Length: 295
Image (cartoon, rainbow, N blue to C red; front, side):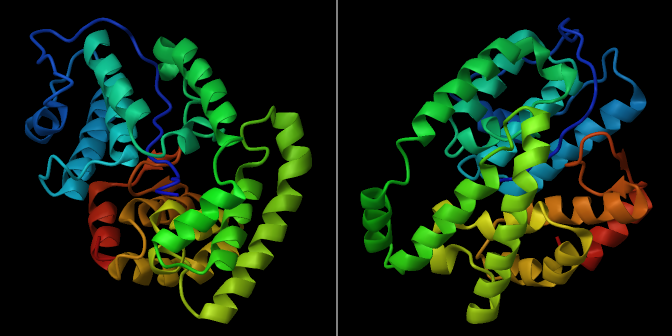
C-alpha cells in the first residue's frame, strides 16, 4: 500500500472547461519531464486559486527532486487537481488523469470517499465512476492468502504481520466509499478497532509499521488508521511518523497530510493543501512549519 494517501491536495473549487490562452500542450510520453519544467499561466482563475495550485505543483516538483522517474500516484493526483483548478485544457487534463489512473495503487484513491468530492472533477466524473467499479471488482481479487504469502516470501517479511496489516487496511476502507449514511453508521466502529490494533502493534515493535516490516505495498496502512483517528492519536504518532519518513520507512506525502489534518483541526488552516475546504496558511506560517518538520 502506497501513500494512501491519503490526499492529498483537494481544492474545493469549480472548474470551467475552456482552454488557457497560448497554453502548452503536454504529451503522455514526456509528461513527467514537461511537468518539471512547467510554469503555469493564470487564466480566468482567481489569485487565491492560482497561488494554491502553483504551491501544490511546486510541492510535487520538490517531492520528485527533478527526477522524471520519481513520480508516484500522489504526485499524479496533485497534478490532476492543480490542472483542474488552473483551468487547463481538456486535453491536458485528460492526459494528467490517465497518468494518475495508470499509476501504481491509484485504486486506493478511487475507492476512498475523499478524493473526488469537489465539483471540479465533474469534467471526468463518468470515467471516475467507471474506474471505481473497476477497482472494487479488482480489489476482491487482490491480497488473497496465496498472494500475501508470496509477497511476504519474496520480500522476506513476517507473513502473520503482513496478513494482519492487510486486514487492517481492508477494515480501514470497508465503508469509506459507501453512502454517507452507511459510512457514518458502520465505519467508526471499525476505525476504533483498527486504532487499538495499531496501538498494540506499536507497543510490540516500538516503531512505525512501515516499509521495513510490511513492505512498500502496506507502508501507509498505519498512517491511514492514524489519519482517520482523533486529534489526540494523531498528535501522539506525529513524531513517530516523522521519524519513519526520515528513515525512508514511509513516503513524506502521508506525513504532510497528517500535518494538514492536525493544523486544520487546531488552527482552521492547513500547510500543504491536502484538506478540502480548509484555508491555506499564510506563506510565513507555511515556511515556519516546513522548517519545523524539516520537510
